[in-house]
Amino acid sequence: MPDESRSGLFGRMFGRNRSAPVVRVEPPVAAAPASIHRPTVRRFKAAKPGRMVGGFGGILADSPRSEVRQDLRGLINHARYAAQNVDFLKSYEMMVRRHVVGPAGIALQMAATLADGKPDRATNSTIEKAWKLWGKRGNCTVCGKLSWWQVEKTAATMLAREGNFFLREWRGRKYGPFGYQIQLISVDLLDIDMVQTLSDGRYVDGGVEFDALNRPVAFHFFDGHPAESHTGRLRARMRIPADQIVHVVRQSETGQSLGVPESHTALRRFNLLSQYEEAAMTAAHYGAAAMIALESTDPDGVMPAAASEEGGDNELPEEMEAGSILELPPGYTAKAIPSNYPDANMPGFLKSLIRGGAAGLGVSYAGLSSDMEGSNFSSLKDGRGEERDEWRMFQRDLWEGLHGEVFKHWLNPAFLAGQLPGVTLDMLDRCDATWRGRGWVSPNPKDDATANEANLKNRLTAPSDIVAGQGQDFEQVASRFAHDLDTLRAAGVPLAASMMPPEVLGPVPSPPPDLPRPPGQGPDPEEPQEPVE
Image 1 (cartoon, rainbow, N blue to C red):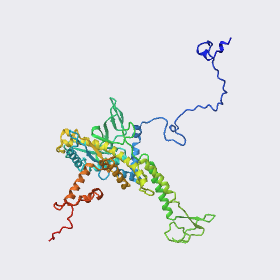
Image 2 (spheres, rainbow, N blue to C red):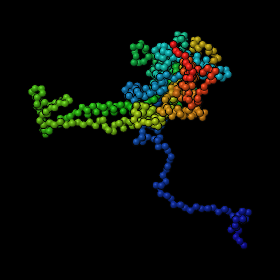
Image 3 (cartoon, rainbow, N blue to C red):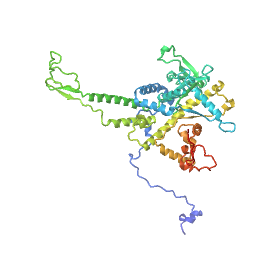
Image 4 (cartoon, rainbow, N blue to C red):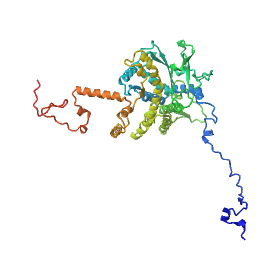
């Protein structure tokens, strides 16, 4: 009989084999050397400082808010020193004023609508004119010395240099014809060192008082600057509610309450660069002066005896005039002191440092240094494009933090003061304000104009988008265009020949003999003309 224990596949499938399953035994494997089995842990190398890389710790000891509070005064002092003494930092602040604010400032563009959703042009025009009138010098600030455009420039500069801009709002009949004025406050007056725990979850951090939800409820300022004791103010603390303070800051971190200078990464670089340039110029000055040293050839080192009279033969010269020839005492030779400055490698070294600083400031090297060597259309368009995107972000931070808040608080006092004629209370609820920053001219305007023409033809863009890219209001451009057309018609200028190319208009048909010729078209040369007396 066949062995039951050795049943085949069908036997195992139909249960004929009742024996215990066979357990496979793995063959023994020789143990590997101990040096191969090393404990490996996947970790981030950048998380730990080392001998070559340092400057940070492995433990989160400070929060972003506490770091800013502890270092803000030093950063501001360093930034002020650099703005006063370092050319590149001064150039950066000038670029901020030019590109963020511009010669015309950030303009208000109202978008109020009627009940049916159509634009309320009358209300928009009234509010825009009133805002422009309030922004004139003497109306918008309590000191009466600044216009709104100057406030914009100051705010942009303070954001770039100090990271913070404060102003206080004053409301009432005695504060100008609009019943609303503002007062600029220096960051030096903020009690940055004030840290305090209050009740109901409130606390003070860096002079800013927060509620349990981390919303600012008040600011703690001093009433005078410590360096201005002649004003008679004794630096008493003032708790000003947050609804009277406009604080503009470029938010970049979670939990951040105070801003830092935009140049905080470039300050040390440019400060050291300025000292290096000063030392190089000093060395170049000494080299250009052709300094020499008198070397004694006497092995005994005996100094020559002084002459009995000034200017004797044995007197050592201390100074030499240009073009002079002197006779040295016996035993002395003249040895020149060479200077390696200006060195041939110095321009490349300076460019490398300036490029790094420009990258930290978010601007192009060519714009910061005014060095256009090696620039072309492609490099300018690429570099300026990135830079202008940063300027647009700066503009938005400014108008969201400053213009939007001030306009929101200005509108009701202006209405109550009767400065918005024809505007009713229900219209104020439908007022939507937008802000229009300056635009820029393209490095290659001809190609951009051709691209805009093609996009308009293919319905890929709207005329208002092209106008907005230039920093202008489309309705105002259309209004000016219509006004110019009326002026040309009144002057008798042929509009067809001046406003459109001939290939678009086509030939102008001649009128029948019994009809008068259209206005603007000259007389028929074949008709006899009356003599002019």
